[in-house]
Image (cartoon, rainbow over all chains, first blue to last red; front, side):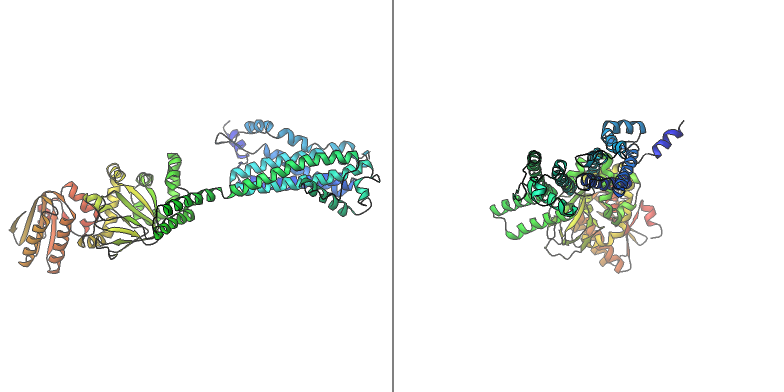
Length: 467
Length: 108
């Protein structure tokens, strides 16, 4: 009894898997091929040839496999992955199954050998048109990729727009030529006026495509114009579609351009705002540059995200794991993390606050009251004497300071200045006390580590430097 | 601050705080001891409540002086607060720290 669901679960393809995304790419190519081949066969080939039919049936096969895979692909609902096969089937029936089914029914087989035609176009070709419904399937693939977010979704939207425009103009070109075909190329049809009845298919397609572009983009050179009623009717439809498409393209591109770099634009707008304020208030130039350096560093390293705010937004359960990855440099370098058990390490990680210091800025200053421990994650810092001389030594990744002033309850007598841009994890004094009282091994770990740096600390104390 | 001598070992006892106010006097007394050629000094912290950075500095300087003259400085009876400062700062590895006076005197 218990083995059945396990087997069923094993046969389910996870929605967010490389295999599924790759298959979606195959299907997208098949959709584009279907969208190009079938209208071209109807308007320009107008005969059922072996190669064209094989291509169409191979594509059918791809979509049959796709439907089978859709019945085995998990989906997400309310943030969790549904892997139950019957649930998957129900979900698929509600979303896309009917369109997919209509798109694979080989209606053309009914009339394949009959030779029946409409206006010179074999019915077997016309009856292949239901396969164009597959375009809806391509949209579902795009939605899945957008969720994966392997790239900025703006690029995906551009790809979707380009494919959509390409197919639409191809269909317009095929339709425009088909209007003349169905009328039998009368002398006043656009094809006859352009002298295209007996030229090669490539030229016929190129002219049709040209008219499609000229009309849908609302350029309208007027060198190819409608003269038959059907042509006028078709042109009106294309104009309506073209004008809407034009508006859609312009609107989409405008929003895409701003959305691709939305985060960057918003970040630098904020920085410009700060810059203008500082200039208006007469803040000295070097200080303004330091502020800008800070923002540049924050952009380069964190893409403008405020780590503290972001971490607050993430629920506690995941935050620890995120912190673990964010602080991996620190964990590798600070010996404190190598001591104690997982519970202590997690408590320490959860209590740490990331802080960024640009080159030249003060991390802590002489005269300040002890507020916590500072763990250096990256960068280089220098200890500055009470006299202002940077001669009391340097601190680098893995070092920490702030413990002595905290333990002695004294004000600092030295400062620490960042020599390079530095990332620091700060442990507030309240958290330090809490860790000490709840995790005895924290104190033990500090003791072991302190033993290794006692000479350096003794030297500082002897000089009167308390950090 | 009081001093006593037994068996070639000088025992120094602090009362209250060893901070900026009391450190100069302590430094003077330790310097006197070093000047007299005393080598073995045991500092009993039983009645010491608090030590500041100034106090630590005195101890560091004294230990250095004694060691250069072939002597040594031992500490004992640290209360919880003072013991924590020594432990977490790593000074417990610089100084020889003992739980009781008896243990500190053994083998000095």
